[in-house]
Length: 156
Length: 268
Image (cartoon, rainbow over all chains, first blue to last red; front, top):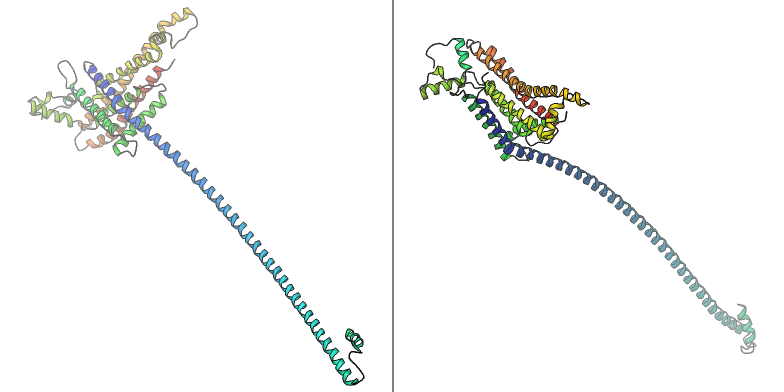
């Protein structure tokens, strides 16, 4: 146990080492480690944010998809409605057209019948006159018996 | 080197003699401690200069491991703000560890080299070339550390409580009294207690480290006296055990320094 000048020498060395460490070793190392801790924290929070963003985007896309599906269903329903409406309309038109055609045809038939009747009436009058002429030959004068012939004509 | 055979006592004594100047200055302690100190600050400063907060290299990782360990110990034990405590603790831990670790070199390696240099380089008698390689087995080294710590304890106390507050604490703690006469009675008692506490800290710090390292060194020397073919039987277990001692003593010195300084800045 001989304590001597060495004590002072070692104390000076110690103080110098501590001062050097204070100046050049400790601050940059701890600063760098804090910086790394900050970067890791930033990275983690960024990852969290990205996860949140992804979840939001997924939700948004699901919403959009559902909306689009709903929209498509609406369009299909509308189209179906429109189609059935068109069919309905076409049916209606066809029915009306048919009826119109039938009516036209009937009117035509009617008029044809009238015409035929007219013709027949004329011809019957003529035939009757001719027949009567042939039967009665001389006695019967067409001019004299015109009113009679007219009454016969009207009965037809 | 030695022409005639040494006795065991001479061998041990030779190993336990410092290489000193006429004034008693321990050159071996000084130079080995200085070189190890430079090794520590050199490596750490190099890493600190190139330190990146990105992916660290292996050396940076190792340095960070030590710094982080020291830093977490400080955060656990020392609750005030101080720019000194971190570098101080780191220096103590690394320097003491390196100085303790000199024990792992074969006991005869460096002394034999020194003897060869002394003999062939300077023409000295090899019996008078001395070298003790473990600076912490020198009380001068351990007291240099612990007395510096004691001065820091006083400095921390004064800066935390002010000169008046510190002197007041010296006389009024640990025993408090309400009435003036009792305060006066307790004044010397308190002062003696505080003085004892203050002196006991550096003595226990330095003698603990010195005792451990001196004993370790001595046992290595004794083991070296065994015949070479049984040397390993005791040498290996003791060296392995000494890894624990070396690290633990460095850690204990650092930890107690932190604790003492944190006590110094806290109010009683």
